[in-house]
Image (cartoon, rainbow, N blue to C red; front, side, top):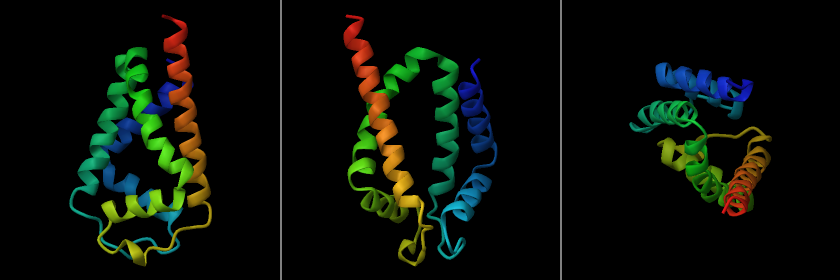
Length: 133
């Protein structure tokens, strides 16, 4: 197993086992004022499901990666083109009073970068599929 796949597996297990801890670490990293807003009831179960999804994708093999690439592209486009709106929407989905949260300065530019990576992964996978036909 490659180092990147191992990292995804470890993160997936950690997120599956300790979703609240993952969210708290993310809040401390990304928010100037962590803990100021209450999580919505579905945020922790969704984080746990994300851990399951990471594990399933990696452990099922290359076919899973190929199947999820279009979804990454779909997520990546708004993150790339309108990162602030993407972050704001994500915050409203996850937190009751998201307007009270102050983001650290790196969050929006990082969101744009992550969107670019997602789009590039999807485009690369699309090109790979076309070349193997």
